[in-house]
Image 1 (spheres, helix red, strand yellow):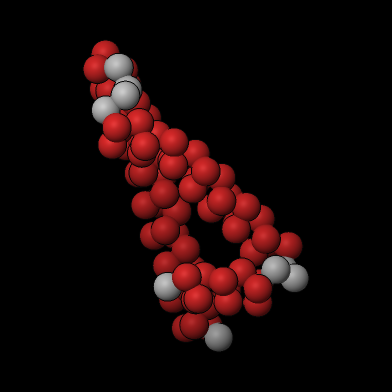
Image 2: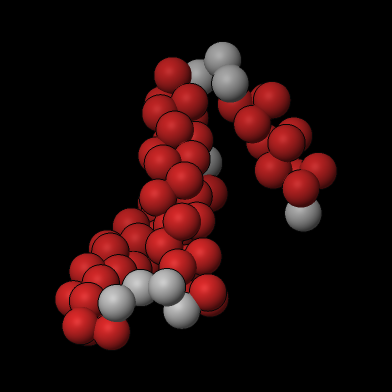
Length: 81
């Protein structure tokens, strides 16, 4: 999996749009890492759990919608191709 990701990054680096998308993905990874660590170590205050989960669920829904749009665009590109 990591080899595929590295190859995709290397092959797509010359395209500005792909570089932008990789940047967005990196921000998501950097943003989610510390929060995941807080949940695993149980260091997040119990009164904040509901609010944090609500925000994370909303962001997850946005990522799902973007993934569905990307999939549809891929199918359309192959069909028109």
